[in-house]
Amino acid sequence: MSDPVVQKIQSHPKYLELRAKRNRLGIFLTALMLLAYYGYIALIAFDKKFLAQPIGAGVTSLGIPIGMGVIIFTIVITGIYVRRANGEFDSLTKDILKDASQ
Image 1 (spheres, rainbow, N blue to C red):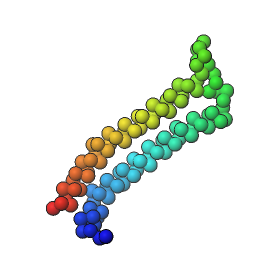
Image 2 (cartoon, rainbow, N blue to C red):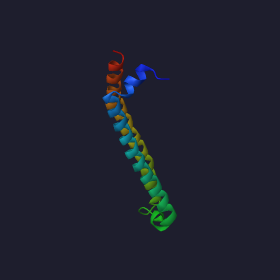
Image 3 (cartoon, one colour):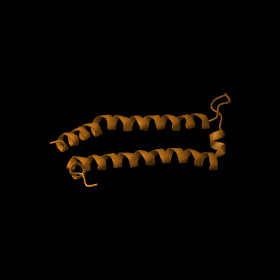
Image 4 (cartoon, rainbow, N blue to C red):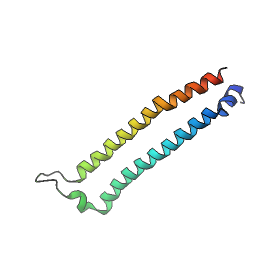
């Protein structure tokens, strides 16, 4: 179970940097998503009158665009993670693999 290549990778400074950056970003984006989602659910549970306010003279209530905002926010933070993963994280991974194969 103690493969020397695995040990070399796990002790590589860039691997430790990659893990720290990836974990930090993941926790931050997860916290933002939980805040947005549970904030919306809390509004539904505790302030129905606010969400039920009509927008203009139409029948659409304020809750609809806020709910769409939560969905769009999810897409945006997913894009942020993918961009960082394809850029910074992939370049660190390539450097680690190049150093480990030597």
